[in-house]
Length: 314
Image 1 (spheres, one colour):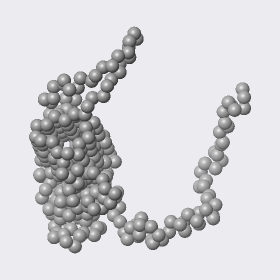
Image 2 (cartoon, one colour):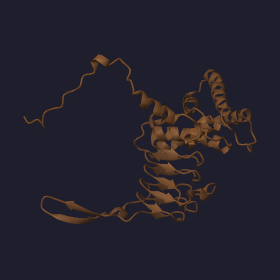
Image 3 (cartoon, rainbow, N blue to C red):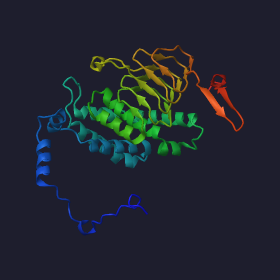
Image 4 (cartoon, rainbow, N blue to C red):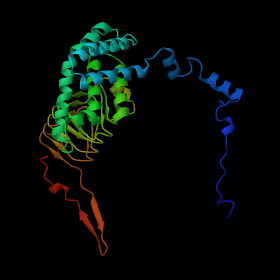
C-alpha cells in the first residue's frame, strides 16, 4: 500500500478531554479588545443601548399559541389567560413604544386579551380551509398538531394584531421565529383574510404590505414580494407588495411583485409564473411549458408538455 493511500492516524486527546482549552493570551486579549466597547459598529451601539431578549418573546408566543390551540377548560383558562397577559405586559415594558402611540403597555395588553376569542375563530377557519384543501389531511387533530402552515399562521395572526396596534420589534421577532421553525416567512404587517390555506409552505414569502383576501390558497415557494430599487429606502412606508383578491389559487414557485399588482378574484396562477402586472378577475395564468425530451431504449423524441390541456377548475 502506498503512503498516499494509507489512512491518517487519529490523534488521541483522551488525557486532556476534561481540561479546558487554553487560548494564547495575546490572541485572547486581542479578541476581547476588539469586541469590547459600544462605539465602533452599529451592532455594538445597538446592543449597548439595551435590546429585548428574543428568547423571552419566543417563550411568550409559545404559551399564547398553546392557549389558542389547546386550552378550552374554563379552570385552565382562568389561570392561563392572566399568565399570557402578564407575559405580554412584561415584554411591552421592556421596549420603547413610539411617542405617537395612543396606548400604554397596560392598555395594549388589555386590547390583546380582548382579541383572543376572535384570534381563535380565525385560526379555526384556517384549519377548515386546510382540511378542505388538502386531500391528505386525515382529520383536524392532524392539522392542528402537524401542519406547519397552521403554526405559522397562528403566530402571524397574533403578531399582526400587535403590529396593527403599533407595537414595535416584538411582532418582527415573532414572525422570524415562525419562519425559522416552518420555512414560511410572513411579515407581521401583511393583511390576510379568512380561511387562508398554505399547502406544504416551505419557501413562501409574504411581504409587509401584501393584502390577501378570503379563501386564498398558496403552495410552496410562492413569493408575494416587492420590486427593488438601488435606493430601496425610498419605498419605506409605501405599498410595495401585491394585492391578492378573494378565491385566488397560486401554485408552487410563482413570484408576484409590486405594490400596484392586483390578482383579480377567482384567478388561478400556475407554477413558476413571474408577474409584475395586474390580471383581471377570473384569469388563468401559466408559464409557457418547456420542451421535454424523452429518451427510450430505441428512440429519442421531443414531447411538448400538454399542461395547457389540463382542467383548471381546481
